[in-house]
Amino acid sequence: MKKILWIPALIVLFFIGDRVGGMLLKKLTQQSNFRYSRMYYQNAEADILLLGNSRGLMFYQPAIEKITGKKTFNFSYNGMPAQMGAALVKDYVEKYKKPKLLLIDITLADRNNAALIAGMSAYAEASPRLDSLIKAVNPKAAGAAKVTQLFRYNSEIWQRAMRYLKGSDEDWLNDREINQFMMDQALIDNPLDFTFANEENMVPADLFIELKKAIDFAKSKGIKVELLINPYYPPFFNRSNGFEQWKELAEKTLGQRINDYSNALTDPKFFTDYQHCNKTGSTAYMKLLKRDGILN
Image (cartoon, rainbow, N blue to C red; front, side):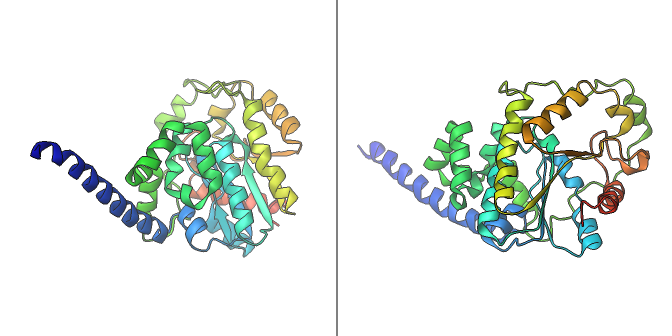
């Protein structure tokens, strides 16, 4: 009988420990300087909003703020899917006063990424939209987060929040230059394929429809939206398949002209790999956006 009593005692101890641990981790999350912590729990008011996947980090915030004198906020995250970006944009615009401009690198419409969406559980309590999205794309993760508070913080995104517990995340961009080996490989590696269907069998048209939700919502609030394709390393990008058809589909589905800077930079010193500029390249890119009136 005594052994049997240990079972409910352990359950109670687990429940208490889980709730106390969850409260502590939530407090740390709220105190972090990570972008989503600032957005949901602090003050992230800005004039210019920036959205993309890892390529959206090439909207280099220090350079934009120096060029324009305006405050920026960047939603971008590695592998971010369009529906997650749409939820974040809607939450931001409803919480803060109207920003002047939203820049979107449309190459974020390339995947569904249910695993990353589930990783936003640390912020689901602050966002009914994120909570609903997590339930829709990853119901198992949503259910686990309801059972145990600690599960909400078992993600790469929360680890990033702890990485920026002290210090700014607005300089989150690699400063390495592409090396000679990668330059040589660019001519023989598998090319980019813009005719993809991802792991959930979503095709580009489906993903552009998700992105359009963010665009339409921002425009309905009077925010100017500029759509862009950020630079690629030209020797690699120029071997890609289906790019022009993909861009045509994007403009048709999104209902707006796309500013194509995919081949705007050519010097290898501007790139850290085939799909990302380094800080030097991103600064040069921001100057092009200023020159062309996009950052006015």
